[in-house]
Image (cartoon, rainbow, N blue to C red):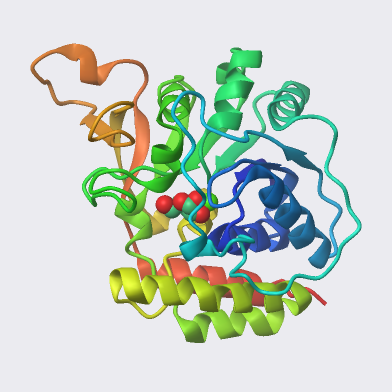
Length: 318
Ligand code: RIB
Ligand code: CA
């Protein structure tokens, strides 16, 4: 039985790779794409989400969401990482599909209420849409099947500050609401995604199978790969957002720990995610509030990448 998901995203080069997986995998029922600022402005995120779905030949609802963070000043989009157009500054084809008039939070609330207990929210950008959906309907906590967040870092260190991962850093107040809401939640952070490198040979196999969408994936990958070479000295890129979907379908490729999550929202460490392991006691109980989450602390990187390639070559776009 395919898993119904709503994919909340800020496409973004690695988002695009994950969207291709969500569009391709027979065990995923993609109910919609909801867009947020983060790697790009929310308008560009919506543009790219519509384009990617149309290139895959699928009619997927796209609902636009958060244009900025709940509280803090918005940081400029990282054009040096994803390109100013979010897809490596490559030339993009025209498309005809249009976004819903319904907002992302409204779409999430409507869909989850229509199918209580069934839907997995997969969030791979800043978490403002999920926070707003919770604000609209707090009962979502008991109606989603699970929330899977690509974000955070427990022991790996940060990628935008020494301690903060981008999605959390871009909206720490929203992240705190989402990670501490009490719904069933899995965090797929840098502790896992940094163990995975989508290498050029694997990317070539994906490109060959994915038609016009593959062309976009391949050309945008070139830009993103150059960033990773400069930043981390690796030849390839970390497929952060795809890891959230790989965990959903192949949790056995990841090592998880259960713990209470907190988010630092102000000061030098803003955007840091802190995990208090479930059975540990600390100086007081403030780090162990709410419901523990399942936190990915490691991944079999080679198997994750091979699963990505298998998925995207076994389900070609004609
Ligand atoms: O830190 C990596 C995350 O931030 C990924 O979701 C990437 O797309 C960016 O949004
Ligand atoms: Ca993303």
